[in-house]
Image (cartoon, rainbow, N blue to C red; front, top):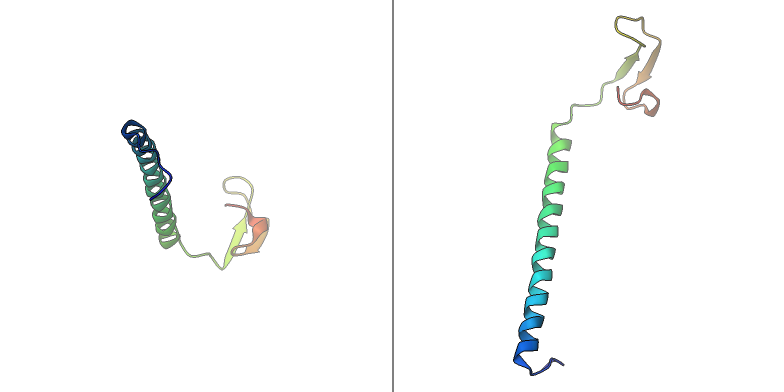
Length: 77
C-alpha cells in the first residue's frame, strides 16, 4: 500500500483536499475546452481574406494606398 497514515481523520482530510484540487482541475479543463471551441468557431466564421485592400483616411476621402489582402501594413481595417 502507499505511504498514507492509517489515521482515519487524516485520510479523510487528504481526500477532501485532493477532491478540491480535482474540482479545480476539472473547472480549468472545462474553461480551456470552451475557449478552444470559441476559437474554432471564430476561425470557421471568419470571412475570407480579400485579394486587395484600398486604404484612405477619413470618410469619403480618396484612396491613398492599395495593399494585397492579408498585408501586415494594412492593419486591422
